[in-house]
Image (cartoon, rainbow, N blue to C red; front, side, top):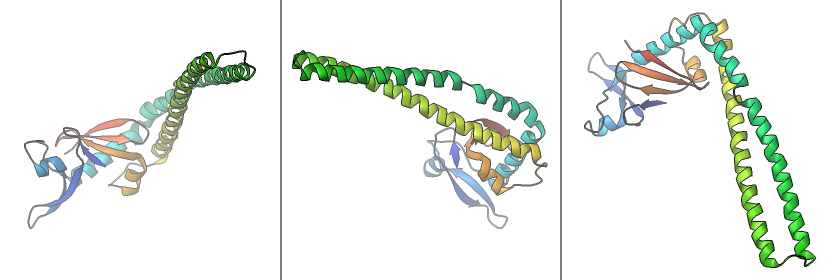
Length: 202
């Protein structure tokens, strides 16, 4: 879940130090060849503290951050996309009727095979293009609905939760998709609702 923003590699868990050892996370590229990525290890305790800080900010400011985000996501592009999908369905139906008409004319020998082949190929290409557009819009709406659900879950949690006093692994797994390490000072939490929040490590 932890990825280096400099080189794109994932981080590996390591035990650092001797007698006073601690858990750290290190960029896989840096471990293999430090000349290819300069990003050194970060302490696990710093990661956890940054997560707690980020979540407490959301708990405190959910009304200013998450509520407006959820409201905008519920209306963003959805109505327009549904209208376009309906128009594409109409075009695909008309295209299918034109294909049937060409096949009928060919069967009745009112149309030469070469002319039928040319016209039918054009209709097939047109239908393929419209179907691709429709599939892309349906995928967008599905992703959009997932984002709305995840944002609503996060808002419900932050509305009811008290400030975190320590790291909660269950909360982390529920809301965080990935950690982006920008430097040994700053990281970003990419949340399942689609936003990435930058946090300072201390």
